[in-house]
Length: 508
Image 1 (cartoon, rainbow, N blue to C red):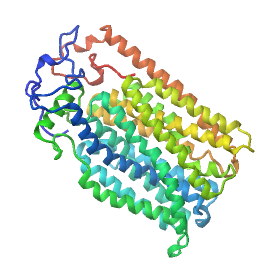
Image 2 (cartoon, rainbow, N blue to C red; image 1 turned 120 degrees about the horizontal axis):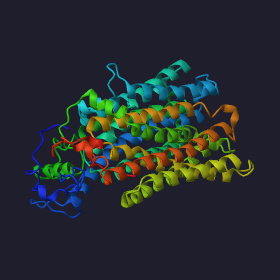
Image 3 (cartoon, helix red, strand yellow; image 1 turned 135 degrees about the vertical axis):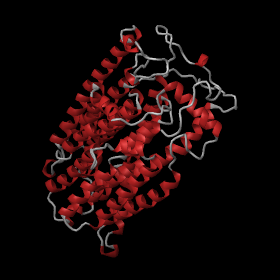
Image 4 (cartoon, rainbow, N blue to C red; image 1 turned 180 degrees about the vertical axis):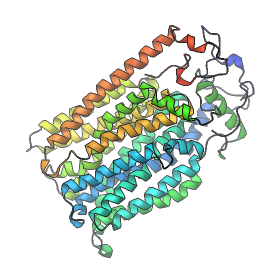
């Protein structure tokens, strides 16, 4: 973050007596909250009112961008029902190759740029106000070009570039929010932000149904208008985003000086967000050397396959149950609407209880039930199978929302956290690469291979999250017992060791 570090005695009137003391080492605990609910600083700023102001300014802006991102990557499923593969003379397997190429581009560009710099590192070295709208503009242009693609080679190329241009948004926003909110506040905001993915599915079905009636307008088939209209909307929003996306608190223009100081104080007492951390490759390597960062990645990996197979194939799955293309477009709305509501509900409950792993595990179990219905329901009862799609969506989206917010809460050190977030997305999306090849054209309506893999991955998710839960609880216990206090030998009270610091506690 830009700006100079302020002395802890000078920020918002909070002195050293308001910081929690470590019972063993007698030193100040940087993660302890110095700003309780209802606290008023000397200028009279109320924390609740300030949080509402931040939410109204920050969350709608980034949520709109992510809604458009998910809409532009998944509308290909709706376009398929409107003649995409027929017009481009693609077989079903060639269509799947196009889906795979999106995620290959996504993973490669998230990991590496020309100079081998993860996208989140670019965000840290530039600014959200520049980086996030520029990403949106880039993929908006690419998404629009999908509508004028003339052959399968062009389809392959555009899907690959779309993955490249969209790759930096989600990890970038997660890191961005971690620079505004305290640790126990980030989870709920990230989950709300991610709920836009489910909302995009609902909107996508409605929009595709309406746009399909433009078939023949300008000599273009309906699927082309889906890409063109939704892509142009993204481009227009991206241009506006240069004005409505805010930078970090130090330079955000909508804050007063008192509010800026207050935000600084509450973050200083809670996390590393206010530390003037210089970028070093050594801090990047800390993430790659931490086994927990890989568990966060595999936690998302086991969810990304069912997440993206559902979003990319739901219209086809429903159509194969015996519905028309138009009916299938509209029937995609209820599963996503239910998923949106449950994602928000689970996020609220998880925030209030400060519980993460049990909600992920229970949500995955709901999704497993959905896939059991899809695999076993009688073919002459499509309503039962359709109910399975609702259960699948209601389980996958809440679990994914919490999983994606977990490292933002638990990884300390700005560069390490940015790298860990990017690692999670990259490792996770490798599951999506596999998933795009599972729903073969001749395997409906049962889709044993696709549904079976999705259910198996969800079962594996239960075990991965359970293992991560156990690791974090054990590490917290060791720190409570003082077994890690040796790391503080020779460390001054102002020095911070990131999440390796024995004063840090992981959220479980």
